[in-house]
Every structure is written in structure tokens, then in C-alpha cells.
Length: 365
Ligand SMILES: [Mg+2]
Image (cartoon, rainbow, N blue to C red; front, side):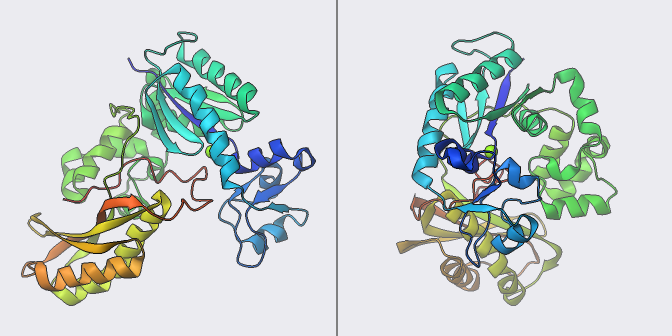
């Protein structure tokens, strides 16, 4: 039986600001640029009480909370705080999988030190982080990553929550499918049309039908919905590619309909690349035809690209010249590989709801 802990700092950027500036403590603050067109990156809990949320435009945030104090981001300070938090984590186990500045999975099945019960161990880690950094992390404990992450959401703020194996089914029963790792808004919509809105309903569905409808991810999310999650905690996973893909409701025939779908896919890939702080020297397109045959084509570029327009241009050319398109196409993917560090990670993209660096982004090829 594995013990996995998901640790996630509470209101991370805002908490660092309140720690470093006592005058901000107890006040509604938002890290971000308050000027017109600015957005809230992270709101303190005092601000959340007014309905201020991450990614909210500054104007809207100020309407909800006129006393809101905007604090410009200090990424170096957050990076330092992150390093101190992760040093505590790594003193307990080498199996630390970072998801963001302030978020990680720990496999503590064979922890180097601390109490043997996972729940007590999580409390020990939380109190050590607090004394070492002055910051609060909440912890979710379970036997796999997915449930540990759900548990930490229950634990917030400043708490710890455990989902035991015998409690998993009850916990999952009414959970919206959207909260299952791997179920995006689109898949959630399609499942809803099939009458499947909860993990409980998904667990009762036919996995063969799910796989036929959604591909491998269909079976993967069915497995998670049943509370089965053997995915290992993977320290230092290195990203080899960034990609996104879309499956069409109706197969597309010929070049023009594919080109019409291309901008949205390229933009999604560019967003992920930006979030991961990478650019790619190779652009890859992937199509899957109605018979599930996959074709990928790629082009190496003189200089790495990360912007949607550049990725789209290369992908369009590959589609037009290198991809056989006689058969109806059901899926289009665009990715970049040959990654190099690109622009710095954009502040605000590592907030609590944002776990884009987790996994589940389909690899191309
Ligand atoms: Mg957080």
C-alpha cells in the first residue's frame, strides 16, 4: 500500500507578500498589476472573502473589493520560497514530483524520517514548512496521486485531509467528472451528453465503450473513477515535448477543414509552451484517420519557436505538403519538441487551479 501526499501552498504568492510585509497581513491583497488590463494572479484569503479570484481582471476585483491592495509580483521571492519548501520535502523523501512552484506529490511509503502514519507525517511536513519558511501548505493524503490531490483541495486552507482506500468509493460517488485527472471541459461535455456527470456514474460505465469513444484516455479516466491509480510519483520528470490535440465531432475531409481547426490547436500548444517556459526547434503535426491510423510529420527549424502564429505556419505547411489526407480525419494534433528554455515562466500561471505541468498532456508520435 502506497502513501502519497499532495502538498499545495495556500495562496502562495499572496502569502509570501504578507510574510515579507507585515503591513499587508490581515488585509485583502492581490498579487498582480492593478492597472487597467491587469489581472489577479493570487488573492489572499481576506480578498477571497470578497469574491476576488485568480485570473480575475483587476477592475472586476476592485469592484468586488474596493480596499483591495495590488502588490506587484516578485518572482524571485517566490522562487526562493519554493526552493525552501522543496528542501523540506526532499528531506523526507527523494520521491518528490514538482507540479508547480508551490505544489508537489510526495511518495512517503518509505520516508527517510518522521512518523510512520502518513497523516501524521503530512502534519510533520506542514509544521516544518511553516517554521522554516513562515508559509502554510495544505496536505492531501491517500494511496494514489489523483485522490491525494482531491484530498488537499478538501484540506484547504491550512489543513490536512486523508482519503483512505475504503473511503474512496464514497468520496468519488458524487464527484463531478470534470475533477478527474484527464477530463477536460470538452470530454466532460461529451460525457454529460451520455448521461455521465459523476465519477460514480463513470465507474459504472462500460470501459470498452469509453475507449471506443474517447481512445485510451477513456479507459484511463474510467480507471481513476474506480479509485484505481498506480501512477508512480516521478521525481524530476523532464518534459520532452509540448502538444495539444483535438478530436472532431465529425471527421474532417481534405485540407481546408483541417486548416480551419489549426489555429485553436496551435494556440493551445503555444499556451502550454509559454506556461512551461519552453520553445521548440521542431514542429510536429499528427493526424489520426477514421480507422485510427496515425500519421506524424515534423520539421526542424533554424530557430526555436513558441508563438502560436509561428507554430501554426509550420504546421499548416506540413499539413499541406507532407500529410496524406485522402481519408477522413478524426484527430489533429500539433506539438513542439527539441525544447529549449524559452521565456521565463509567466507569473500567475502556477496558481492553485493550474496544474498544467502535471501530466496527461498527450505526447506526440
Ligand atoms: Mg497553491
